[in-house]
Every structure is written in C-alpha cells, then in structure tokens.
Image (cartoon, rainbow, N blue to C red; front, side):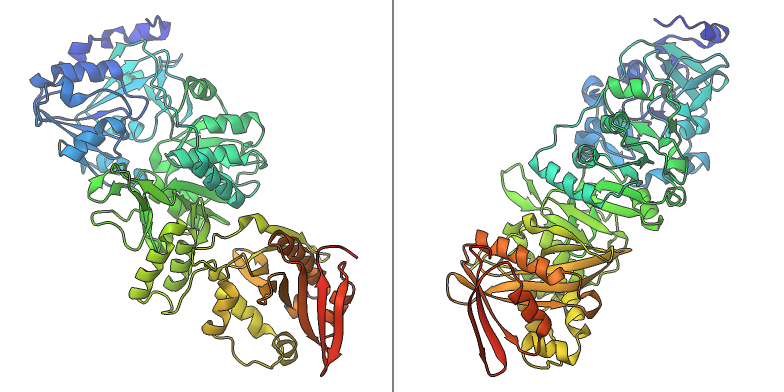
Length: 632
C-alpha cells in the first residue's frame, strides 16, 4: 500500500471504498468513470456492488476496456443504472447491442465542451491517478483525454490513488485540493495488446508505409491495422508523433531512432498524445519521460492544432466504405460497434495540414458469423451504417489490394479506384452496380484473363527509374484508373508523333479506343506507364507495352514518350523491362513496324541488346523481329 509522504497533509480526504461511493453519489446522478486502461477498478467494483442502493444513475464512459460485467454483477437488473458511451469498448458492446446501454456519437475533440459548457451536468467523476508529487499534483497517468476536463466540470472528484500509475507529463495534472476524496489502491494497471498482424494486415501496413515520407508526423487510430503500420516504418527517418493514442509500437520506433520528433513543426522534439494503450513496457516508457506530453483531447484532437503539423499522416480504420468513398467506422448496419473517437478530428486536421495525408485502412473482406465472406467495399453502405467520414474528406483508402486516392476525384474516378482495391471476387458485382447507377461508362470493363477471370494487378512489376535530369519516374503496369492520364499523354502529341505511334494522324482518343490500352489481362499483354508525381499531381509521361499477336511466342511492341521527356533513356529502360516480363510469360520474340521517318525508334531497335532475326523495309516501313531469349 502506498506510503507516499506527500499524501500525509491530505490524510483527511482518505475514505473507505463504500464511503467514496455512497457519500458522493446519489440516485439519478450522472457520473463519469475514468477512461480506457485507467479505469479505477476498486471504485468501479464497489459501485457495481452498491448499485442496488443507487438506482437510475447514468454512467458516462469513453472507451471502457476492463473485463467488469456491470449487469451480471448487479443481478441483471436492466434499468438499475444506464451507461452512456462516447466510444463503445468491449465491456459495453453487448449491453449496447441489447439496448441496456446508450451510445453518443461525437468527435472526441468536442466531448469536453458538452460538460465544461454545462450542456451535460456531471455530478461525480471517478478517476485513477498517480500519488501526488512534492507540490501536491497527481498525474492522470496514461489517460488524460476527456478525463481532465470532465474532472474539472464535475461537482465531486473521487480519486483512486495508485503508485502503479505512471506519472506522465504535459497538461496532465490535478492538484489534491481539487480532489474531494480518495482511496488508496495498489492493483496493476490494465494492459492491452493487439493480436499479431496477419498477412492481410502486413500487406496493408506495407502500402501505408509507402505513403509515409521521412519527417512526417504520424497519428494511428485504434485498431490492429493502424498499429501494425509501426512495424513497417522502420526504414523511415525523423518521424514525429501527434496522436490521440499510441501503443507499444511507437516505443520500438523511438528506440530504433525512427521517431525523433526533431523535424516537427509543432512541439519539436515532443511526442504529443492524450492517452496510451499497451503493456507495462509502454507504461514504463511514458513514466516521467520529458519526450512525451499528454494533453486533453480538446487540444490534441483540435483539427486546427493538428493542421499545424507539416506532413501530418492520419492512419485510421474503417468497417466498410462505399464505392464513392463514404466511410463507416462505428457500426455494422444498425448495430453500433465502436465510435467516432478521434478519427473525424484527425482526418480533418491531416487533410488541412501542409502535405498532410489522411489514410483510411480496412481489409477488403470480412467473415460473418455464418462463415460467409463479404466485401467491406460495398456499392452502398448497409442500412443503419453511419457515415463517420463523408466522401469529400477522404483522401487515401488502403486495402491489401492497393491504394486508392479519392481526393478531388469525380464519382466515376472514385468508383474505379475503389473497385481496383476491392477483393477480386467482388469487383464484377461492384462494377455492375456502378453501371446500373450510371456512375461509370456503360461499357466499362475490368482486367480479365482469357478464361474470363478477374486479372490481379501485378504489383511485383512496379519499379522506379532515376533520370539524368534528376527526376524520378514510377514505372508500373497500367491500370483501368489511368485512362484519363493516358488520354492526356496522347493528346499532348504533335500530329507527327501521332502518325509515328498509330500510322495515322489521329484526332481523337475517346474512351472506347483508350480503354483497351488501360484494361489488359497482364498475362498475354503488358503495358507499362512512366508516372511523374509532384505535389500529389500525377501525369503519365511515357507508355510502352507488348501485345498478343495470335502467335504464342511473338508479341508486338510499341512505345510513346512525351516530348518534354525524350532523350533520357526512358524507352530503352522500358524495352529492357518489358523483355524481362515477356520472358516470364514465355514469349520468345518481339515484333513491330516502324516508319522510316521515325529515326529515334529505329535507333532504339538497332542499338538494343537483343539480336534482330528479321529486318525488312517495305512501303516506307521497317518490319522487325527481335529474339528476346538472348542478349546480343
């Protein structure tokens, strides 16, 4: 039991557990129980035990994570007391589902004002804190979030003082003068662990990590996938953290020198948070650590404050997302599952931050209790599902199938992006719904194999090309979502360039003629595009590919490069890369036709590292065949 000498002058405030409950809580009162892993277990257990004497009290929660079973212990009396959760934790999920508890949907940053402004009166706050220091201040420890402001708003504050609670720094203290009564406790602080990330989570984490630049400031919401991302960030440099919550993974990033906070534009050198969820190792890490500042959520989650962090990255999980980008994160149909939490705050804040990136993550499928596999990317959200993030605020969506970028995109572009990252088994169904609602072209197609199965995008062929002019291109297989960018490249060509590429001075490149160039099977044909990206603006500056000729071992090739990007070796690189891919697909030869006027392309063929087995000139055209099974 705690013998902290700093408590001696406040000895008159020490009470028994029974007195702490019955002297400061009356029937029909509204009380708050400390959040998350800071739940004051001894006070809560006594409250449950004495609940028959306290009918009709309302209990306010944010993220209850204990294993206490309120209704079972209270004799199962449904209306003995009522819970009101701002985020539904595991201990209340069943009660909410049964109608025995309430859920109040609200962004985390706005909850304190409900009480501080008096819209919801709070009678008593039950909190857990560290022992007081020399000057009488106790730390709220691992949960400051809404606890500090609600303790300020309550008529009475009853504290469970526990020496096992870390003494965290920042705006995280309450003075003993502001505590009306306390009990001494010595139980362990509740610990929390995420399951080890499965293959799907690891793939999603890898994609997310590819979006996180060096010197970014990161936020990770609650969930297995956001926290799996920490393992994928080990090669980053000088990351910062500004997040309502973080877990043990951040400790690893600090110890590996990945998170330094040295490049932050707000609170340089400091990790900013409002609570943590994790193991005793995490609690020891935050204890009296001057690198970490805890603040109430009206500060950490204020979108304006968040937006002051350059390169703020917000990583949050969704339950389902429709094909236009509406995000559901708090319910499964009519069944409330979790809450809004800080997700809405950080999506807004990161979206407004300089070079900020709000990222939504979700597995592409879910398994129902019946064993049925369903898509989490849906034509329309299930009835009852709440839109936590409206479509206009969504930037990135990541599944194990890739990354969709939606911000500023029209509905047709959004739909194609979302279908592109849905599970292949559900893409046809999603496309048919999109056609039914006239979201996409009536003849819109998906990449399919010759057998009619959905072709999976071959991510393994993605690479980068560093150019002599200092620029870098991403070289990757073409996607159906590239149609507009490819049209822009083709329209940029002069009449002579169009003639060289198509043997006719084409005037238009309509959807019907461009779709076959972006929707390919990846097994008999391959088109690579070279993409230049600057400030989220992407453009295709080169394309090249091979196409089935009907002869099993022979493919026809063609290339096109924007006039501003010629003479940099792009076509030669693409040719060599296409040879590598074609060999894997069992092609033996490349063939093609080049106008004699097209000196640049003739030079590419003549100087290639692969022997020409056929080269003849007829009618102003050079016909060639190249053996790609060996180098010259």
